[in-house]
Every structure is written in C-alpha cells, then in structure tokens.
Image (tube, rainbow, N blue to C red; front, side, top):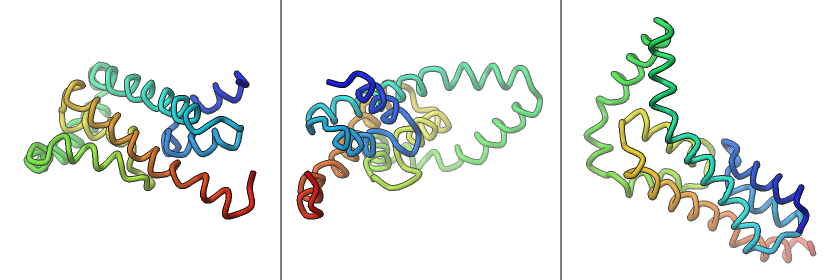
Length: 155
C-alpha cells in the first residue's frame, strides 16, 4: 500500500465538502480496493467528526468570552436557530442520520456537527447518527463505481 496515497485519502476524508463520500472514489483512482478505500475514507471522516464535536462548545465559549462581537454573533445564532428546536427534538437521531446520509453539497458530517452544536445536542446523541449517515453517504457514492468505471472503459 502506498503510504502517501493512503494519507491523502484519509485527509480528503476529513475535509469539508469532500468527506468520505468523495474520498473513497478518489481512493479507487489510487488503485485501492473498495474495502481499503472505505476504511481509509471513513477513518478520515470519523476523525473529523470527533475533532469537530468535542471542541466546539469550549472554543465557542472562549471566543464569546474574549470578544463582544463573538458574543453578539453566538447570541444571534442561538436565538435564531433554537426557536426551531422542537422540530429537531421531534425527529431526533433519524433526522440527523438522513441529513448526513444525503450525498449532496452542504449536507455531511461537518454540517451535521455544526447543527448538533447549534441545537445543543450532546456528543453521545449525535456521534452515532452522524457516523451512520457518513457510512451511508459513502456507500451511495462508492457502490456504483465499479459499474461506472467498466461502462466508461476504465480499468
């Protein structure tokens, strides 16, 4: 296995708007098997989820304490979004899963993490739904690849 290519796929899996759902197809271009591509892409994506969910509250608290502008921004953000909290609580984890599972722009793990933070959903209530959604989105974009590659005359 090419270590540089593997690290590249993991990093791509962690990037916003790219995530595992697009890192895995890229991994197939590097010649990785579908199983290895899945493992590498999801590793990057799950590391990003952990790195996003855990520090969001402390970092925003630090920003709020250090800047009146940030305090106004976060107050505005929470006031604006949390008035829809009833809908979020009503549909819960299945809604978070579906939001992340749709492989379209602006949905994914980064957006799911941001939404969970804004709505005050704790890590243990968010992490499983986001990871399952990321796995689903990655499978949706990766499973058709062998057929597409064959149809368009690839390897």
